[in-house]
Image (tube, rainbow, N blue to C red; front, side, top):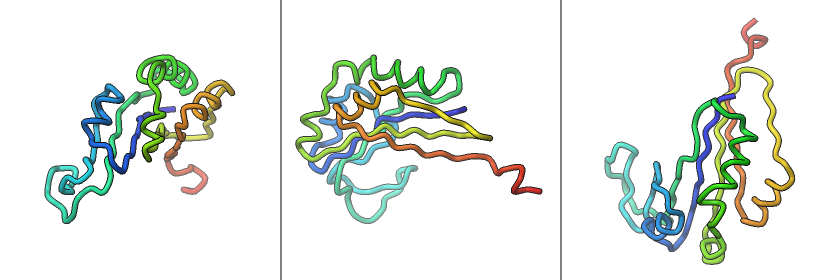
Length: 139
């Protein structure tokens, strides 16, 4: 299975700089509260961003299993020493987005201690699963 994972943070009042400083990573995608909206290639759009959004890439590839990635990530920074309590208490939210590309039946599992970690850290797990058209659908 090929997958990617990102840490995504949303906040209604923190600036992008404050989110970056708190997390200690560089975002790939970002919207900064109060700044003019723009397309991915920098073209202006009407309005301003009404909240800060930052997406920090954590992994992309097929070299390791999902389970190993999850175990290793939760035992490394920013997760090992980072608390999202202040971010969440002030109205923000945190999620790990998994993008999975599958070609056939695939499965993955999370150990209970990983689920408990996500719960205690108040991190939502979101999955985006996309697959190749089924060979049965083509016949």
